[in-house]
Image 1: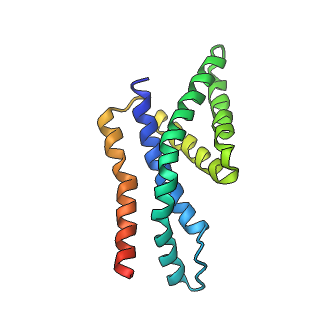
Image 2: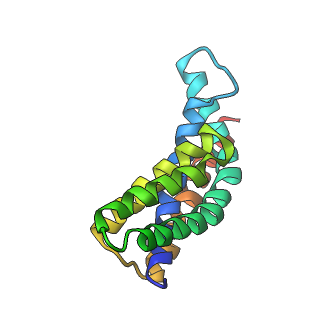
Length: 150
């Protein structure tokens, strides 16, 4: 459990940051018609999405991902190849709470976690804490751009 939680936090930092950037560009609510206005409005909305979605991804995503992985390991004790299928299904089930928006976040979280797991199964706490600089950095950069524009 001790080595898994830091990996999940790193996965949340990476996938949560990517997810908010995608949300900013896909769900651009300011509706600018030219490309420069669209880019400014997307960068303006990314910090807002980050403030609301990242804590949910960090707390809810990490906890349900750990539950999904443990249930997947328990169910697939006989056949290790089915563990990822069960875990993916549970990630999707837990991620369907807010329909397709949270579904996208859960799929992104699952893929990021599996890539990290394949690379290295256990990460130290120092890397987990450093990974939290990713969403903070993106928030600061976007807010700096917003302050520079306005």
